[in-house]
Amino acid sequence: MPLTTIDPASALVVVDLQKGIVSALTDAPVTAAIKQATHLATEFRRHGLPVILVNVTGRAPGRTDNGRPSNSTAPGRVGARQSANTTAPPAGWADLIDELDVQPTDHLITKRRRSAFHDTGLDTLLRDLGVTQVVLSGIATSSGVESTARSASDHGYHVVLATDAMGDPDPEAHRHSVERVFPKLGETATTAEVVDLVEATR
Image (cartoon, rainbow, N blue to C red; front, top):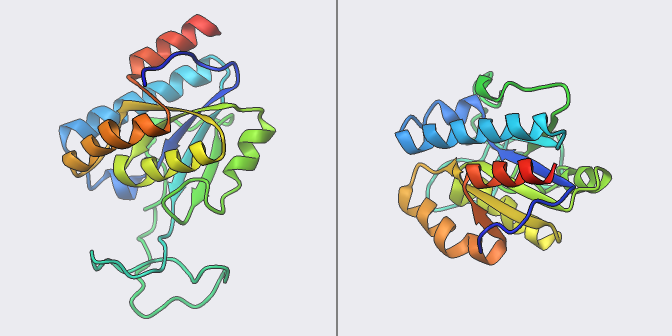
């Protein structure tokens, strides 16, 4: 459904805009999405609204058909010895991209699964800040962003999906999330629509 309002206690959550992921995605739609996401971060900061920057350092250990090995430890066993087929990411892989211009007021969340809510303390942080609405952006639309949106909805937040501030290496997967999944989870909007409502309500 289209965006109706920006809550007084709204926060921006930017998912996985980190060097190791972004460097592999150079197509125009993803580049445009990064520009919009960084614009949202600038505007939320300017209006004194929380900006939460999420990066990822691991994956779920279960086997999948895509054949990529997990780089995370066994569930519930922090520091457990990794399996032989585990490949650690290179140095700097999880660093946030320079374009985000990280500020001291930003909140940093590191996740090890697709959803930014899973075992990260994000829900506690948002509740401590009094947040009732989250605006989501980032990469990839059909993976980290969609998983975080589902979790945000399940946790009872008003969810806003800034659809031009997210990208996916698979255009069809992006379209499916935006057109079929997101309308069931919250309200969709462009970056301009979000910024206009922030301006009107702050």
